[in-house]
Length: 551
Image (tube, rainbow, N blue to C red; front, top):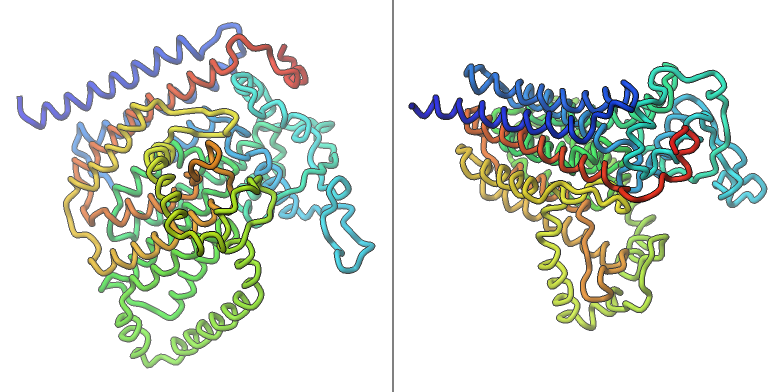
């Protein structure tokens, strides 16, 4: 038997194992003849997606058909995003209740609906949101049914499957007040637009709540496709990392973490793209890079430190392509951009200096719980006890290293009260696929001096994240160590993985790794689904579900 025949036989066997396992799993655990056809159809759709993505990739392996990273990514990301949305339904993500209200409030703004009863008496606080008095409006169905899908596994599946998807009864369209304080609407422009479209089309509760999440998934698909089109290195790593369960879940939820992840990737992509010798620079390219940075600021300001990657573009290219262009409009745009940088920079320094100083270098006095006895987390204590504080920080980093790695992949997806997990074996295999892809996919990498600039940006961001965690979060296990929130590290790990990649074109080794990851995702999704289906074994049905006739 030749190597080629053995390779094809192995691919077929893997497909058979994955699809047969998934089919048997769904028959034994998901399908229920006592439930409605919509309930069983809900799970059947997940199974069909698993089979379809496997067959799609198997065709390329067996028939030696030409393939491309962007096209394969779009198909896989679309399929697995929908699958993740169905396995991890709405309000199962981190802080997703507040994210949902924020997105709904944003959809109100896009639909021209105003908030009510702001502060109007005191001039100095005019227009301020008053808790318990100010409110925005929601459709009655959306407001009433939301608690029925808030961490109510496994009954969430029945509520959504049997719910209103494409039609909302007239009486359910009545507007009711919601006094929940919404987060900043600009963070939810994408998901808010999806909800606004669904409401305009008359979708019911299930259709509307999924439409908002679907728009976030479409942003992942579009951003991934665009980056794969133009980035010179790391295409395999983009596909591998974007299909990690944690990334799929965050980008299939209402969380604005997807904005931080995707625009960090876009910023790196643009800087690497413009650094190529054959790409001609223009003055307005600075504006494009600035927009990428500006999109990071409202979500997680710390990622704006990635702006140092701008210097991965050789300065001599700017001089050759723009400085020596002898085109008046290039000089005019450059002058306006530089003037804008000076004005904005001065405003940021003068207006936000004290806010930054007090929140980072003194003590963060916000809504997140903090242990006031931990004085070692003040800037002044650090200056007087540098060795002790650094040792304390290093111990925390060592303990949390594997914790953060496995959580970035999928060791914990969804709400902390849910603790949904991907099987450890799947987590390890997905990590191996990523590392093997970096090693065996031979080709040219970025220049050594560009790695220095990349590392500087990553290091600055990592230090800023760590300082932020020191002053914001109460450590796990008392004061023994500080735990960095793994979600803050996702853009760092993702950009590092992509930058370590090569410019290798599409090849069989890369496709085989993507195929293996697809098979692993089948087992990962089934494992997570099994956990969720048995989450309330031996417990009574939540009282709130009586609203929809489940008892």
